[in-house]
Length: 202
Image 1 (spheres, rainbow, N blue to C red):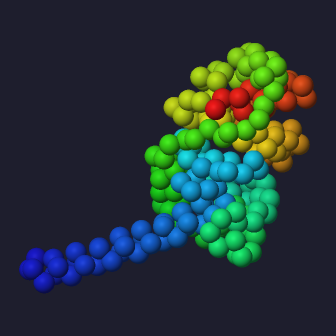
Image 2 (tube, rainbow, N blue to C red; image 1 turned 60 degrees about the horizontal axis):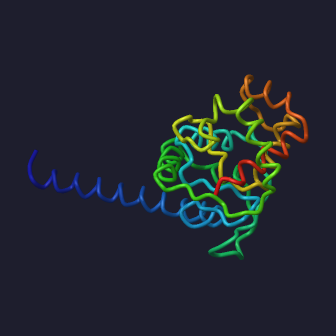
C-alpha cells in the first residue's frame, strides 16, 4: 500500500473516531444533565451512576431501549434546563449497542460517591440485620461491592431506592427469580429499615 492510501485511511479512521467520540460526549452531557457531573447525583429521586458495575449498567440501558422497564419522565437538573423533560427510554432509543456499552464502561470507571442524606440510626441497625439475612449473598459488603455485578446499594439515594422497591413490589420492574423470592418475603417495615441502612453508608 502506498503512502497516499495509508494517509487517506489514517485520516478516515481519525475522522470516524472523532465523530464517535463527539457522539459519546454529547450523550454523556445528556446523561449528566439528569444524573449530575460525572454521574454523581445531587437529587434524591435520581440515582448516582458513577461506579455502577459495567454489566449492570449496560443491561439496564438495553432494557430501557427495549421499553421493558418503567420510564418515568424527568426534567433536566443542570446544564440547559430549558430542554423538555425526557425519559430514559427516550434518551437511549436511538443509540446502538456499542454506544450503550461505551457509556456503561465510561461511568464504571468513575468513582462512586455516596449520597449525603439523613437517616434514622435505629432503622439503619435493623436494616443491617435484614440485609445480612436476606441480601448479602448477592449484594456483599453491605451492598457496596461492585464486583458482585448486582448494583451498588450502599450510599445510593433513598428516594430513588424507595421508588425502585415499589416498582419491584408492583411487578412493574422485572427482577431475577431468586431476588423476587427474597423481596416478596420482606415486610413493609423490613423495606423501610433496608432503605435507612443503605442510606447510612456515607
